[in-house]
Length: 63
Picture 1: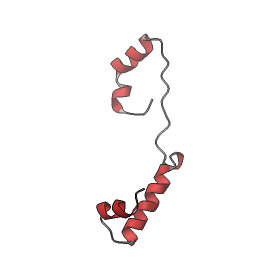
Picture 2: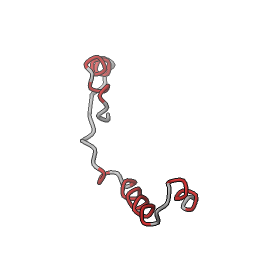
Picture 3: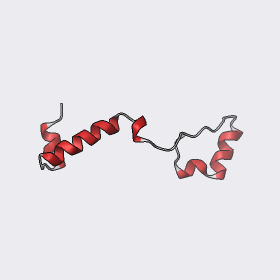
């Protein structure tokens, strides 16, 4: 499970365990584990270099 606060509530944990499941939480978020974060960083840098609005950037760089 992710680390959303409602997943850590006692009644949520009890409901999951009472249904026969084991709780396993994901590690803390790390952009290094999510490859799309690197692409978003590149896209943001390119948008800043070209001084474009988000709308203009996606108009020219979408498939």
